[in-house]
Every structure is written in structure tokens, then in C-alpha cells.
Image (cartoon, rainbow, N blue to C red; front, side, top):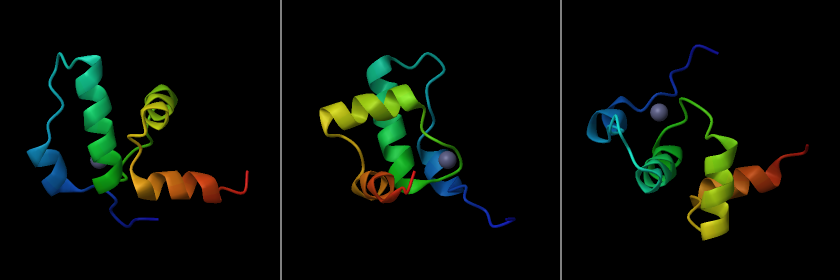
Length: 68
Ligand SMILES: [Zn+2]
């Protein structure tokens, strides 16, 4: 449980602007989910990325594999 899931290098290179637009948030979360697992993607962001076909492949797979 103590294994780090934070991708420090990605976060250092991809700072979310303080006044990020909705489009910037979508792009940030898509990139974040593909490179780091430090926190869950908000449900509203996930839904919009899936609707746009922007969801990273590995997340879509993990979502489909859920037994719930
Ligand atoms: Zn992260």
C-alpha cells in the first residue's frame, strides 16, 4: 500500500494552470490518466473524454474489466 503512484516527472512537466479552461482540464486529465495514477479522474471528466473518444486506451480497458 505504500508504493508510490505519483509520477513526479510528469507532474513537473504538466502543471495545471490556476485558471485552466474546461478544454485545458480535459486535456490535462487525459494526459494525467495515461501517465500517472495519483488520483481518480473526476466522473464528469471521464464521461466527457469517453464521449469524445479521448479516453486513454489503458483506462478504457481497466474500466471495461471492472467486475462491478
Ligand atoms: Zn498524478
